[in-house]
Length: 134
Image (cartoon, rainbow, N blue to C red):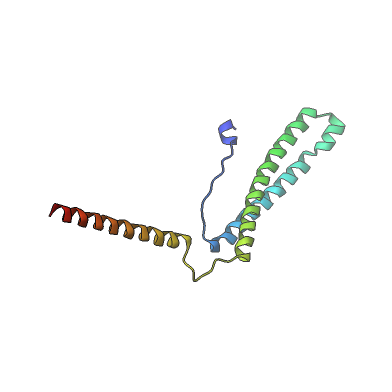
């Protein structure tokens, strides 16, 4: 693979809370399958036996490197799952109040108040300018 394909990138996207359990299930199922494949691959190559009987140092080093890369990829996937699960646990422990306005609504109230004050100042300034011109 080219180095470009080996690079990792962090992405962020939002999903509905109701969709998160299904997404986590899919990610964990994939991780579980991948872990099974890594273990099977390790057993299939019988690295310790190759070392003892054939002194296959380079073969063993190459296979171990491949397995480590797979395990690193799996570790990233599990870290993502852990972060999502912790977020879900925190959400369950501290549910958002249903009756209070969201942060956006609070900000919109502040913005609307500022707009109203600005408009009042513009009107007052226009009135003063009109009176001075008369």
